Length: 467
Image 1 (cartoon, rainbow, N blue to C red):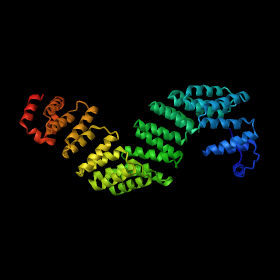
Image 2 (image 1 turned 60 degrees about the vertical axis):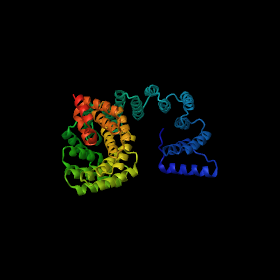
Image 3 (image 1 turned 45 degrees about the vertical axis):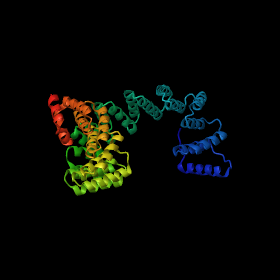
Image 4 (image 1 turned 90 degrees about the horizontal axis):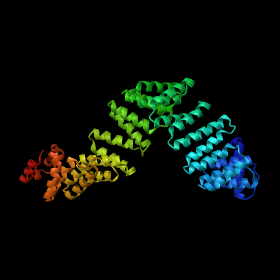
C-alpha cells in the first residue's frame, strides 16, 4: 500500500482525528486519510490507536480493501491467525490480483513457522502482473523465508534477483553476502562482489564487503585496497575506516591504525569499539599513558562493554598494579555481576594479592556461571587446601573429575587430600590412578602435601606403583 499524501496533509488529518477522539464528535475522513493515519500509528507502535482508526475507517468505508488489509495486519500482530486467514480469503475473492493480500497471507504462514507455505503463496504472487518494485519486494520476502529455513542457496538466489532489478538495493546485497558468509563461501563471495563492482564500480558498500571477505581469508593487502576504494567512493564511510584500522592492526601498522580510528571519531559520534582499539594500539607501541586514557574513554562511552573493563583490568595486571586492577574489576562486577570473565579476573587478582577467601569466592562464582576450565577447578582446589578446607577441596575435585576424568592433576590432589583426612585407602586408590595416568605430576604432592610425601608408607607405595 502506498502513502503519498504530503506530510502537511497527514499532520492535519492526524490532528483532526485525535481531536475527534477527545471530543467524541464523529468527523468524516476519506479512505486515504484513514490509511495514512493507521500507517502512522502502526509505524510508531501505537496499536490501540491504529485499531480505533481501523474501526472508524471501516464504519465510514465498509468496502475498503486497504482498510481491511490493515485489520488483517492487526490480527497477525495479535496472533489471531484464523481471523486473519478468513478475512484474507474474503478479500482474495474481491481482488484476486492484489499482491498485498498474498503478502499478508504469507505473513500468516510465516508467523506460524510454516515457511514453505509462505514461499508457495509468495511465488504465486509472482505470476501476477507486477511492476519491478513489487517484484523486488516479493523476491526479498521469499529470500527471507528461505533464510528462516536455513536454505541459504535459495535465499541468495532471490536476493540476487532483487539486485538485478535495483543495483543499489543494499539490503539485498548485505543478505547475499550473509548467505555466502554462513556457508563459508568466501571465495565465491569475492567472485560475486567483483562482478557486482564491474557494473557498479563506485559502490562503497560492495568495496566494504569485499574487504571483509579478504580480511576473513587473511589476505590483508587485498583487504586494505578494498577498504581504500570504499573510502574513495565515500570519504565519510565510517565502517570502511574502522575495517581499515583492523587490517592495519593485523599488519602491525599501529600508528596508521590509530589515525583511521580517529577519523571515525571526527566523522560521527565516538564508538566504544574505536576508542578501545585506539587504546590497544597505543599499548602496542608502548604509549601506556594514552592507552589507559582511551580505555577510560571506552568505559565512559559504554559502561556495559565488558571488553573495556577487561582492557583496563589487564592493563594494570601487566603493570603489576594489582590494587588498581582489583578496583576496576570490582567496578565492572558492580555493573554486571553475571559476567564470568569479570569473576575469573577477580579471582586471579585476589589470588595474586594472597586474598585467599576472596579468590576462592571468585573461582566458585566463575564455576557457578559455567566456566568449567580445568585450571579454574584446580585453582579453587588449591586455595581451599591452603585454607585447610580439605573436604570442600575434595568435593570440588570430584566435581571436576566429572568434566575431566582420568586427569593426573586431579588424582594427585585427591590422593593428598584423602591422606590428610586420614582416609588411607582412598588416598592409595587415587595415588595409584595418578601414577598410572602420568607420574610426572608427582611434584603436586611435594608442593601441596609435603607432610604426606614424607611418610615412609607413602614413599613405599609410590615406589611400588610407579611405572
